[in-house]
Image (tube, rainbow, N blue to C red; front, side, top):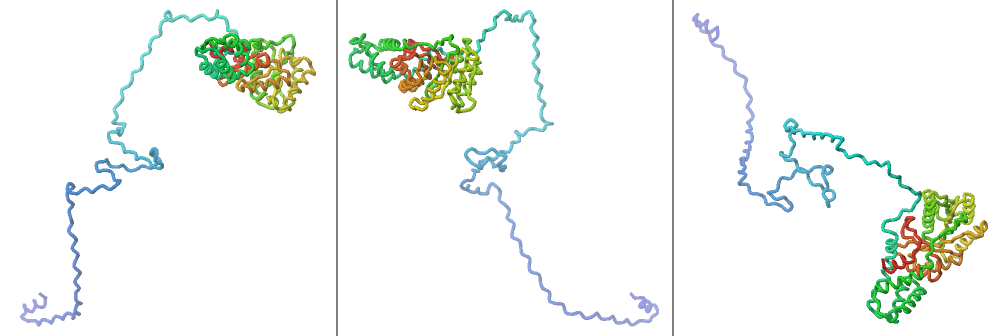
Length: 455
């Protein structure tokens, strides 16, 4: 209540109330726009229990439901490749909890391994006394002595003639099984000997011996082999002559000839080693000036055996001039023997054979009697071609003896019989291997029995 009204009541004076001012007129409000009704959210569908969810059908290529979960693939450079599938690696499975190593703090301590107790040393009284080797003599070592190959020379010779033996004995087995030795059997025997590389003259001589001693008799295989060995030995015995140098003529000059690849250089090296083992002073001349390997081979053998080697100053040097120089040095150094190597040449080349004649002519200017021996080296694997080689070389340089090499499993050993029958040249040695001990003097009886397969 206002103060003025209170005062009027107390004094009895009523006061006329002043009219209240009217509020200003309001403008009519714009019609209200009702907001759009809110959208009712769809009812939330609760998921059904897992046991009621139908399992989807597996698609092609999906793993079965019972397979373990596939681990995440690792980078290919960390995984081993799958054999047969390029660019693909198998996933590396994660380690299982039980396979994971426990922390160091949780690892149980490993018990210590007890050390092996040391054994006490035995008393000196129980130890065996050491043997006294002071009284034993020292083994005598011969420089350059040949070392024999295992098996013995006769067994290696028999093995080397195995091809010729098989060819000869197979036919003999079919020919003579308690059969009467008639003209038909002798004719077949002659054909068998020719195919075994014995040659026509030797085959005819052997068959004539059979006709003279066993014609009309029943003979067996063993009897024929023994008789055949006797006939072959009769042909080979006159030519079985080892090379025996005349040591009174210093130097004793040996010229070694032959076609390419027969083993001339190797034969010279083996002869040098054998003569050095006898204590002889040996000099070798590397006359195969067109083949550097032959010169190097002789130089290596010279170092091994302690022999002097006269080598050309350059490849392709004059072989006759080298032989002349070697003979002069051998005289000056008082060598016991001079072995002259020559270049391999085909026997049907007249120009090359004439160069070989030149070597002989140049040597004889210093000494008319040299060379004291001309050795023709023949390869036993060439068969009847060796007969033609011997014929030509004999006409050119007056061959004095033969050395037959390469009597291995592929050799045609019957050709030695053919050479002996046709030329009658001494067969000094035969070679059955690579060492110096495998070059041995020719033995007629051993060779004949080996050729027919007899021990």
